Length: 363
Image (cartoon, rainbow, N blue to C red; front, side, top):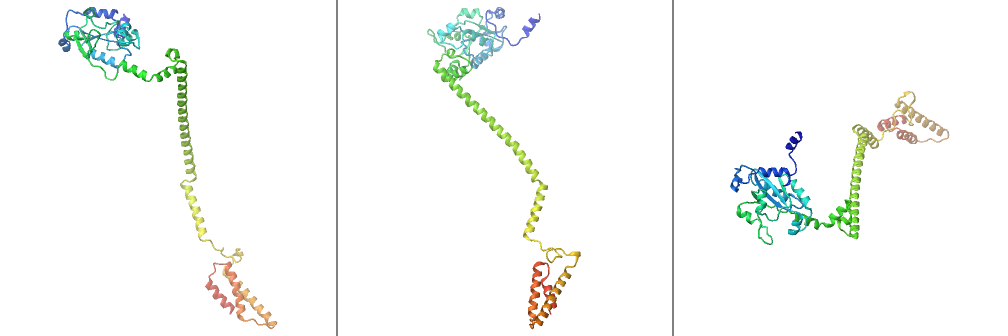
């Protein structure tokens, strides 16, 4: 009971073959005595499902095939789609060699969701007996005449009886186009299959061709590996550069942050000012040393001038004893030289005041 319910609830399953029980039950339920015209089928006013038949080879089942079956399924409301697939013997005789064998082509079509039933070993031309046995109401195919040795169009009798409905071909895709692509890129596909483990015998290539293709595969592999390694190296370089740049920025901000920049600016400004205006001699020093006991600098100058005057007087006395009297001008020159020596050591003294003091004491 549960298995039956599960089977009925199954949505996706392959279409049955015409000899399967499910297909036979559907065919038996069909009252083929009630003929359905094209107008009745288009209007949807039918008492049973409309049985539409489409046939073909369906080699390398592609979207063009699926689109044709979709059109056949939707040509009328409530369609039961039957698809006939020709076997290998008939196909090779009438059309040529196929890539897929008959069983593969059957399975490819029966797994299309638009298909309700599969007819194996389908005939090339449809006889009245075949149509009656499968209870076919309409045949769907493209409207292009399909010629044979004996007929200009094998679907002409069905068109005359009003049992033919046309579908549209999908431009730009067909089994012949797909085969042409493979033949065009033969070397590429041989190399592809060799790389995937196929032998030269399976691919029907010679020993030398096999070696050539394998060498080309190795070269492509080395190129791909080189590109991958270069990509990794570039990625590592960029990553390291980003890390180092962060370190450089952090170090720069640590060394030359706002506080450090202010400190460096203050130091540089002080050095520039010191270089442009050098400081004078320390105050309170005659010989470059500080005065002891905090004595007044002006007093030290007065003492020095008195000493110079005394020396000048003593010198004048000695010269008188020896009968030589130096003029007053020479004493003044000695005192001036002493004063100039003192002035060179103490630039902070005011020149005008010192000259006045010197003249007073010399006189």
